[in-house]
Amino acid sequence: MTDLVIVVSGQTYERESIQKWLDSNHQTCPKTRQTLTHLSLAPNFALRNLILQWCEKNKFELPKKDANVDADSSSTEHKEEIDVLVKNLSSCHLEVQRKAEMKIRLLSKEYPDNRITIASSDGIPPLVQLLS
Image (tube, rainbow, N blue to C red; front, side, top):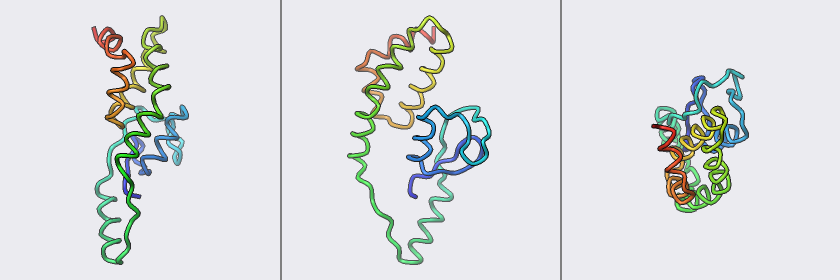
């Protein structure tokens, strides 16, 4: 419980869990079932700090994650998905393009290493074209 995020409905989740939910094409809050108007995740620093204070007070140590392993695996894990999304940016259907752009934006925001994967998949030119 060290990477807590808030979804637009106001509920807090562990980033990895809610990201899996969103990656499964769910666009509702798992708890409230409210439709999520956007899929941005905001860090919940307040709750994280409360948990860390409690752990310190009670001499409880949270397990540590290896950040480098997570970054490498997330980039590799999303490679195939990014390739498909980049192809969808050139779709003749506007809704397919919008969904691909939204998902690429989310992946690049949540996992900055994916920006390299997006660029190496030739994703920049179609993104620029959508903006013009």
